[in-house]
Image (tube, rainbow, N blue to C red):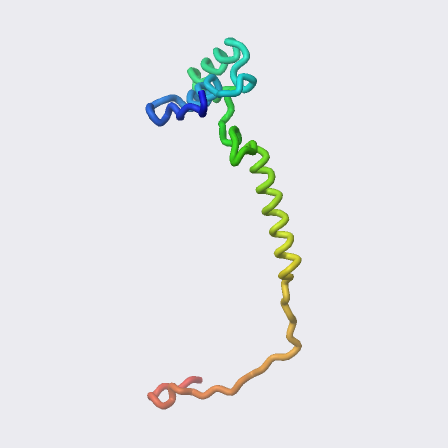
Length: 120
């Protein structure tokens, strides 16, 4: 009653894909997020039986809360933060490439001549 139930795949690894999402939607704490009719539940169960993805039971990747905020809002805030941080870094550290108008050619010494090798 106080927390979300543990995923069923923790106890049974051999479940068909999508069944865990159906069970999680049926057992969720928020009544508005559960199946509203048995027809919806049966429709998703039939889809899993046929090897299809359930239509109403979505993945709970963005469902739930982090530090009291909905995961969807946390994900959106994180994306905005990353974009703003990238823009700030580009503003603070602009590309400082310089073009050179000269080329220095330095003299070199053939060190292999002393060992019997000659460069041509």
